[in-house]
Image (cartoon, rainbow, N blue to C red):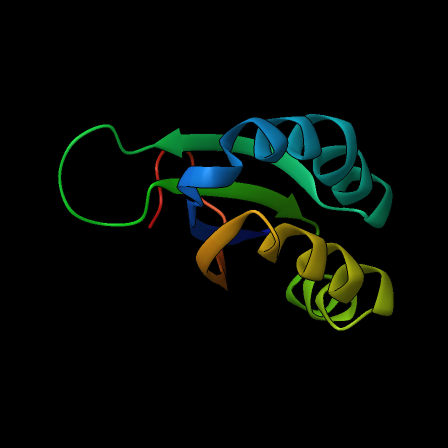
Length: 100
């Protein structure tokens, strides 16, 4: 069964420009190479909650756990944390549309 890896975070105010460059040039391409297929990204413009919600599709729960336990993923997470705060992720059964 396909699953989604749901990730949330807030962008550091002093790192916005660098964050967007990192996201496009490094984070998304590396995610795809690891087997995470980005499906959607949501930005909270108003209200409570995380500023960014990003989702990636993976063929199975086991595949997601394998990817998220890899050294390559941990290295990518470390780089992401240079630009964001409150980073969290979870694995959920895949559905169409917005998931939190």
